[in-house]
Each structure stands twice: as structure tokens, then as C-alpha cells.
Image (cartoon, rainbow, N blue to C red; front, side, top):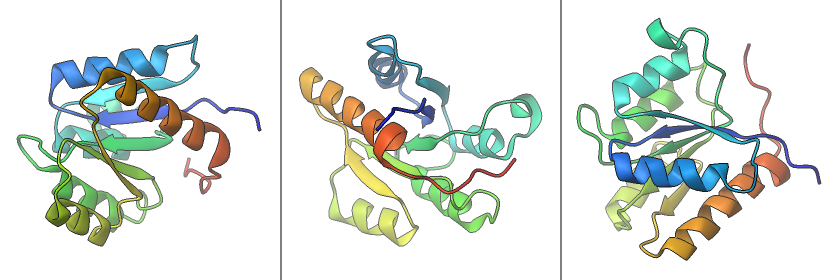
Length: 146
């Protein structure tokens, strides 16, 4: 099955984590791209294409950290899934937390997936590779609104 380019919106306030994701997505002459915002309000503005994000492409999938400053990831997820224009956008919670409470809350707010950030580099690389392969090749997303 051919691999379609994946455009990730990474919602991550940690610069090191964000750079790691960006580097791993770019490996192997990938056509996949990563746009990064560091907080919840910026994520919602990006997805709604407001202000400085008016001309950005719609993401294929959102990678959403839970521990954000201004507005936590659970709040961002709830806003995305409550918005009729955004609710079909796939959201992967991408967190350092493996807590049952976080998983329960994320799925209650309609997260499409919950992935725990690996501590080992090779595991991290494999996880990002698998996410790219699934969302760019195997998954058939709903049509994106214009």
C-alpha cells in the first residue's frame, strides 16, 4: 500500500521532545512534515486556522502531549472533539504518563489513540516509524474539510 505524506501537528511544550519527534519524522527522506505549537490555545488556533495560522495545511493527525502550561492536553482534546469542524481530526495523546486516570480521561474525551513516550531512543524511533506507517499508509481517514 503506498505511503501518503503525513502532516503532524505536534502539541508539545518541551523543546527537546519536539526536536526529537521532528528529527525522527524527517528520517529517510520522509515526505512527512511536523508543525509544532507549544500550548493548547495555539493548537486550537492552528486547527481552526486562525490568526497567524490562517494559511496552514490541515494536519493528518495531532500528536498531543497532556502536560502543557496554559491549557492541559485533556482540555485541548475536549475542545477539538466538541467542535463539529474538528472532531474528525485524529488525535493521538502522546504522553510521558501511563497513568490509568489519564488514559481513562483521554478516551472519555474521544482520543483516537494513547501512546506513552518511550524512554529508550530505539523504542522512540520505532514508535514514530509505526505511527507514520499507520497514518500514512494503513489508515483511511475521513475526508478533511476544506
